[in-house]
Image (cartoon, rainbow, N blue to C red; front, side, top):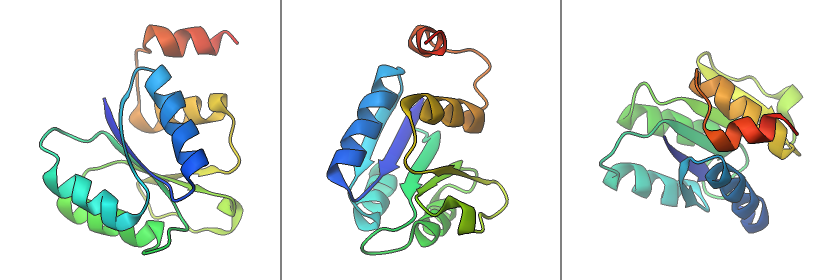
Length: 128
């Protein structure tokens, strides 16, 4: 499965990507919406999930999601925000509150993707 993580905080992005890669996902990353849209435009393989921060420096996460859905209409979207309780998430999109643990991130990604079978890495984390 291919995921795109869009996060302007380098440390948060690096840790998020690291966790998802340990769960055996193929992860691309972008530091802002402009970079993310460039990745989406040139990406030839299917993209299974866009995980984006809501507060990006060049465009809101919601605006990025709308543009991404224009390119890939059925793309699952997972927003990440420290203000998750106050945001209105459009139908068919999901939210995870910051800060999140690796286990919360794992569970939310699995929920959004609807993974019926877990990879060995995901299964081993479940027992922790």
